[in-house]
Amino acid sequence: MHNQSKNIIFGLAVAGILVGGVVLLARGGNSLESRSNPSATLTTSEQHYNFGRVSMAEGRVSHEFKIKNISGKTISLDTLSTSCMCTEAFFRSSSGVRRGPFSMPGHGTVPKLKEVLAGGEEAVVEAIFDPSAHGPAGVGPIERSVILESDDGVLEMHFSAEVIP
Image 1 (cartoon, rainbow, N blue to C red):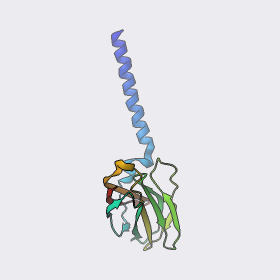
Image 2 (image 1 turned 90 degrees about the horizontal axis):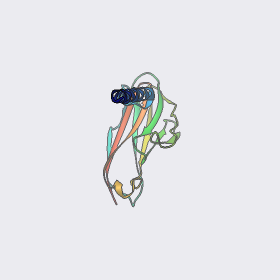
Image 3 (image 1 turned 180 degrees about the vertical axis):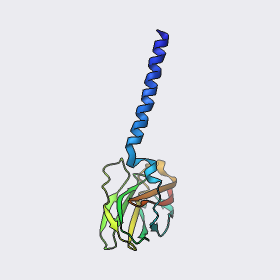
Image 4 (image 1 turned 30 degrees about the vertical axis):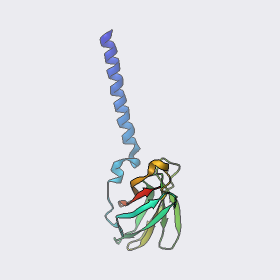
């Protein structure tokens, strides 16, 4: 009977591992693999911006990343998201239309961007960081990202700050 119990436990463990693997594969669009394909034709004015010292007491700060389609083809911009709930992103097309806010997947709904960027066209992605979002535990250095996914790949824009009370 003792060997039978070991076999049952072993079988359940193997089944759990298999089910976990299937779940990870099924997640598809949220996997790291979908974010590891850098865009070949979308560029940004800067990959990283440093806010420097940011005070919780003074509130939110923002930075605009200029993006450009350097190809001759139209690119579909599918999703705009952020790496943390303390960050929101907005998209402003070349015609001046502002869309958003877009935020971190898993924290409320993240609408699809569903925009296009013609060859040579520029747009703006605005990142807004709330230094008080994490409360007193959020003091210190931070690194965050805004992720733009398109049919051409992924463009990540990063920012950092030193959060002070």
